[in-house]
Image (cartoon, rainbow, N blue to C red):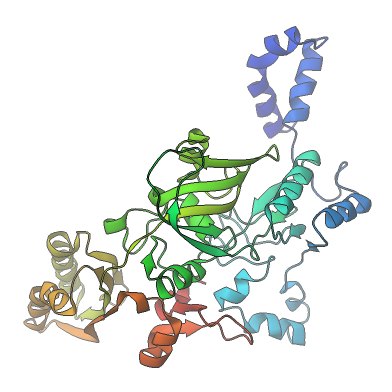
Amino acid sequence: MKRRELLKAMAALPLLPLLMRSGAASARDAVNVMMTKFRSRVRPGDPGWPLAAQWEQLKRDVGGRLLKLESPFAHCATSPSDSACAEALKHLDNPFALGDNPALTQTSGWADAWTSQPSAYAVAVENTADVVAAVNFARQHHLRLVVKGGGHSYQGTSDAPDSLLIWPRHMNNVTLHDDFVAQGCVEAPQHAVTIEAGAMWSDAYDAVTTRGGRYVQGGGCTTVGVAGLVQSGGFGSFSKHWGTAAANLLEAEIVTADGKVRIANACTHPDLFWGIKGGGGGSLGTITRLTLRTFELPDVFGAVFGAIKASSDDAFRTLIAKAMEFYRSALFNPHWGEQLSFRGSNTLNISMVFQGLTQQQAEQVWAPFLDWVRARSEYRFAKPVQVLALPARHFWDAEFFRAHAPQLVVADDRPGAPAHHVLWAGDQDQV
């Protein structure tokens, strides 16, 4: 018996008396019942792996949207000069292209903790019924089931070899509400937005802020999936003012492991609602849509960019101490977000955003620290420190940046890509 199976059997022992009373003929029968319930996931080649006819039935059940997956880079090892390999590599640094391929993820595991490998099959779900069919099929055949929204999971939870993947990329509708009331709740209507499970934050910000004139608390990287971020807590650029994404969750539709469709909010299934606000993407079920609170936009959003280089290790230590003191006294408040990062070559990189301040007020905040740097010969500005501000409605406006600051964004360069699919230039190294 494998160690995992032994542990599962041991976990079942406290339930033996209950099973015996419920009609199990013997302790052996009871253990067999529990082992059947908790048996290892079935993999290709194992007894019980679904037959071709069963996969075909699933394909019919989901309207033909069952995909057999293989890595687009699989043949690169043997045919690196092949045109198909060249085409796959061409888009390797485009996170939108990676997200549009169910066989790929946007991260590939840290320190060999996990390896990005495609599932055996994927259901390209387009509605809740497709999700139910995939969940039921996986449960009935003891398959490992994974969900990939944006594919940004650093833990590898949107990726598993020999599994069935639920891929909601085409479920990306975004709907704004002026008078949302959660199901089963008696409360005042409020402004909100309902976002389907396959949407990225670029989709949400385009609909809510650029076109809708409202704010929704999400992530800083526009290619992150909305549902995964919310289920993981969702600390974003402006969370020190508006809270985490999960804290602003009002309601979710979720398909649980029994194939049931449930509404979760503070009044209906509140325990499930509590769990999905930080329990991790896909941990308690497969979310099909979620509804988040929206807010009035401030007049201005802004950013501060730059880099400071120290001439020696000792000078860099002093700079680190001064920067942390400055952060604690001037930046650790609801106006400021994002990061100061300490890099190699004795460099402090500045990439901050702000809200609730004018450009002049932001410049005044930074003046004492920058004056301190300028007064010392052991420091130089590797990149000039710039304070920029713009109307908040344009903060995620792709057309605005194309016209006024194209160097700050990188567009999805594939033919036919949505115009709002851009990412911050500083986020390119996340792929």
